[in-house]
Image (cartoon, rainbow, N blue to C red; front, side, top):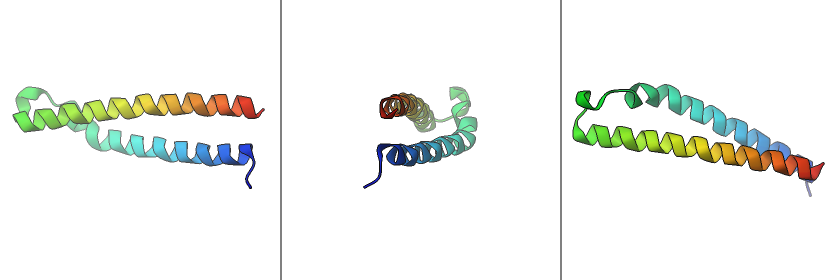
Length: 77
């Protein structure tokens, strides 16, 4: 059975992978997210706004996960 610290190292690797995926999403999506609404159709504007919301929600969840990870490390001592 893995120790708490071993499990936390696995969580850290998963967090790093998630961070890399978010960076890739930003590279691909950011040009679309920064387009003004007057350059997009209504559907494209809705898609852009949804993508922005998804990006922001993922960033927020990653912050919360990072905070929980740090707290777990402190508790594991």
